[in-house]
Length: 162
Image 1: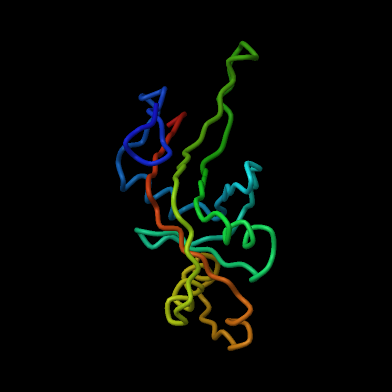
Image 2: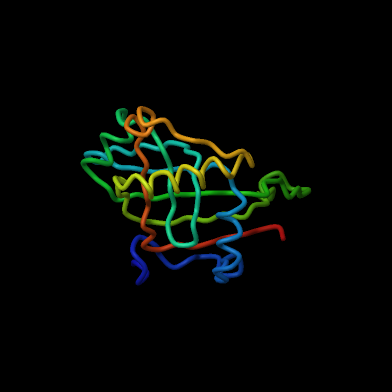
């Protein structure tokens, strides 16, 4: 049974669900790596990417060729995941150990960014997560780089151990 939000089902552990969008945004702002799930002819493909989040959409960059780009050209529906604050909650019973974490999972549509100004803005956001330095992007590099925007259709958060 699907939730009204595309892709999501009702969360089994409601006590662990994050419903506050500010908290979800905080997780997206603090994680560095996004795990991007794609599907091609019923075959899953998962890849980690550095990303940026502008409060409405996610962005990542890539070479213009490769497996993820070829899959996205055929099927632009994606699932994504970020997770932070990892740890273990120990217990005296081995099977009762649990993972401490804060996680966001979402579904969306990937779109290739063609507008050069938007592309540069997205690259600046991505690079800006790792350094305060400002960069210029040579025209040859911009032409060789794909920037992808993920329009978020639905998003949920979950936490445990806090």
